[in-house]
Image 1 (cartoon, one colour):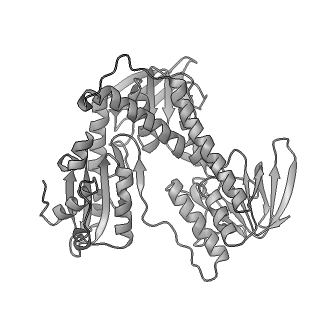
Image 2: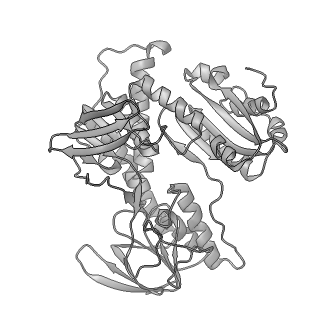
Amino acid sequence: MSYDLIVIGGGPAGYVGAIRGAQLGKKVAVVEADRAGGTCLNWGCIPTKALLKNAELYQTLTKKGKEFGLSFDNLEYDWSSVIGRSRKVSDRLAGGIEFLFKKNKIDYIKGYGSIIDGNKVAVTDANGESTVYETANVMIATGCKSRELPPFPFNGTTVISSKEAMVLPEQPKEMIVIGAGAIGVEFAYVYNAFGTKVTIVEMLPQVLPVEDDEIGKELQKSLTKQGIRCLTDTKVVSTSEDGNGVTIEVEGPKGAETLTADVCLVAIGVQPVLPGGEQPALTDRGFIQIGDRYETSIPNVYAVGDISGPPWLAHTASYEAIQCVEGLFVDGHAPRKVGNFPGCTYCHPQVASVGKTERALKEEGVEYKVGKFPFAAIGKAQAAGDAEGFVKLIYGKEHGELLGAHIIGDNATELIAEMGLALELECTTEEIHSTIHAHPTLAEALHEATLDADGHAIHF
């Protein structure tokens, strides 16, 4: 059978691109070695959010119950049920993706895809049998996997990646997390909420190094208050494990220290998962090089999502897939590359941002003004008993255009959408001033922070 498009990889880039291609009337197939939904749905974005919700609920009941007039005798949790709920959520959604394939008449081919050339893909199934399919175009969307810390390979028990962290059969008493990006911080929060003693080791000066400095410092203060030890500006000197636990030698501002734990979660980044067969040109870090239309060095072969490099986010991967497919099949469409995009971390308090940080603007020599507003001054936050954090908005000094938005606090990952739209539309302080925000809502903090940028916040 011949196709207009074969997509290798069924994650947020692959399945979204496939569906868009089918919507445009094209004959499409998706090749997936594991399960529809990819890492994000099965081992990343979705199951971790289920675990985070469990952790937040348990933490609220144990630490804030009295504040809400609630009391409990012998409140307990079942670890296997906590893990089980997250797996059920993933299973349900993976089934939903498979339904969408059927609905859109997309052929779902299980197996490992290899590129023979730009018009042929070989798929090897679980029995080792290979079938060759013809196609007009190939889109690689094979994504990434967790990167190991040499010489400290994953063993699935004491040295683990985020995948194993989601399904540990027993909750560890102590855990070391190497890397304080979104993945490391989220798992640190989950395990700490249920009582595991957690230490984060980060070689850069703050947790969430890509975020605005004030946000990183505020989150580190909150995590420390919750009982998570944060060793920033600290490098790993040596590592060892004996089958029962790990020993990590670190060196930081206060000198050398030896850390021990039952488990070490290594969350230092990702590495590409390349398909088999003919390989396109790669970057020096092993990711696929692409051009303006997402094309690779192999004619008729395209690459989207994590496999082509940062920012390694599900929502940017989906965006790229749609741009690539519409560039292929919509006359006159000029594909766009990722510009402004939201970054979200789902610990508690949540962190979300879009646009430039204050640090980046200083380096670029851009003149700007800042507006800040604390959730403690927002009625809805006080009523909900969750008033930690603040909104920080950065505007151009001369024209008042939005340059960056940074939020730490409850529902930050939902609030950031408005600021993403404002950035895309090049909104100014005046335009956001004139947009009425409902009361009482957390979104009022966005309005007040904008007012503060011009020196006239009302409620603080």
